[in-house]
Length: 101
Image (cartoon, rainbow, N blue to C red; front, side, top):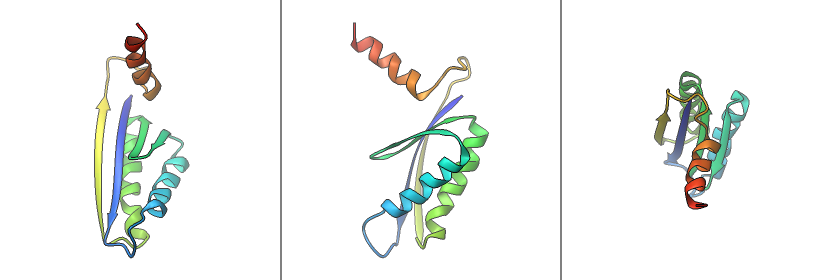
């Protein structure tokens, strides 16, 4: 299972706010059914990497469809194949367990 962080930034828009563009991208993730977490600086998605890539492509196109002239997309992938239980929650729990000692 993969855990992917994505940040999509539209450029060349009429204003400086981008929340409407972010909302459009989040709607795409929600429709996909993939588990995700919106954060202040990006979005985390977990699941099958092929499914995530397909969703990322649609997300990248979304700001263009909403009027952006340029889009910068940053993607960070943690693809662990030795443990099928590799999840967002598991990653956080692993660090937390070391802090609680």
